[in-house]
Image (cartoon, rainbow, N blue to C red; front, side):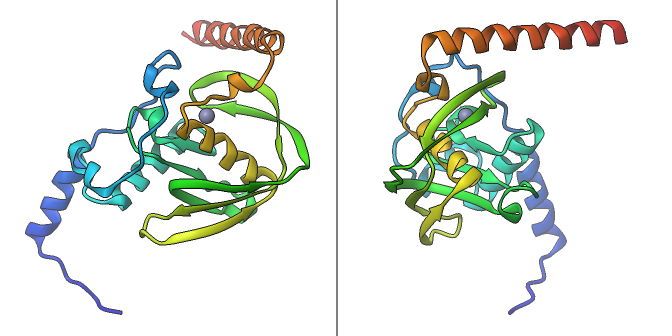
Length: 203
Ligand SMILES: [Zn+2]
């Protein structure tokens, strides 16, 4: 292990670069970028969006995911054309397992399916019961560029599948019936109204 000492100048340069990267913001569900399949990720795409390397991108993605209170976030949800997502970092899910996933390939899914309630940062207050395979096996590249094989079960498998859909421009509202979706939308609107009412009385 080496101990790299950086000069003040280098440090200032780094800080300046950090400041030039504005916080990532969610784009609305009506934005076509949320509904379009994302092209394969390549490091050369980073510079055009102010990222020096994958670590910068992963750091900003996790920051945004946390800010919005999510357990998964895909790049296209914040308007970035990168086939990548971040997931996890929650103490109650697989001991805080954190995944930064680039160019994922789904290898296999279990025949066994499970129903679970899902939310999506792009659709605040909307929660849907979605049926999906319980277990998956997938291949992807991590933030160091290493190729990994992963087997997932439970909540992490669920998050991975949800985010993997985002890579194809698919969202969870496409996975349920219109009736179910309408009901969930009504419920979401009620919740939003309640919240607005609360903020009004506070003022
Ligand atoms: Zn989502």
